[in-house]
Image (cartoon, protein in one colour):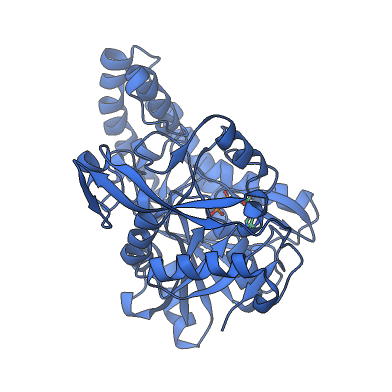
Length: 425
Ligand code: GDP
């Protein structure tokens, strides 16, 4: 059975925790898009970890962790991440890397930085991990696939061609040091040595695993609203964040994805630029930011303070729909126990009209939030394991959100730990 775990919002919904939790019952966990640009925070019996590239299932002895072909593969980063886990006492994970994955090159990171510098105030708020230049090159067909590392003759020619185009931009657009084909080749040969032990025909491996009835998780990075096509373009990421892309980025048939567990955050947070209708500011935002997540809402990759907001039912319903959510895990609910009342954005006012449908970006930029208010529960809900034991107002909040999402909420997360979860029938 293949199950996808994806985000309905702007990312940082707590997918890492849900994946880590569900990985206990799974055989294989696959990353299928994105790269090391966003982080998943996981707290378990080994300690606290911020994973960036490895799937969040690497902490169990029985699981295989896969980097699918859709991922932006930063090879030194992968090796370091595996090494860091081992040095913190985690058993060496079994990691496989698709032979069709493409390699995130050192110059992708530089181009990301140079472009953000060049754009100045107009910048995208990129994490500068090289993701946009990487995917641009992949689709411009000047990327390097892992399999190409093993054909040295072809590689020698290709580095020359790639350096030609890159150096024109470096010289004339960015005025930065050029790259040399010889150095690039040497880097790639080093990468070959590093990645060789992990390389696998992942699509075939997963085909066999599906036939054997193995339990497979696809772990998404970021959320619906950062999807290149269906998100808040152009303030999006450069790969698809949707469960549907799991079929392509892992190399499996789309109809094998039977369950799409969509993670929804009980309030809103976002990193980077772009419209954020229910955003809050000042002390109200600071308080939620400090209380949020586990030890505050600050980026796992960059440490940047996240932008904060109230729960946005319009964006989250859309986020679930576009993922094809079959069920919802509602996370970080415990954080909201301090509030007397909880504003929930239930509509957008655009040019004097109220809509419940999430619009395209130019309209979204004009949207003003329409709020309703629900009473708070004013107590700590961590430690509660049964739904019926939650305070009534807390259940009302969950049930209100469930109705708005038009998707069953089957899990409620009330703490960052692996076992802090309430299952609902
Ligand atoms: P991801 O990218 O979707 O995996 O999310 P992140 O890891 O960036 O952000 C989620 C943050 O919230 C992390 O610090 C988690 O440890 C924390 N977290 C996850 N679920 C819960 C929860 O139910 N309650 C609290 N308080 N924190 C949570």
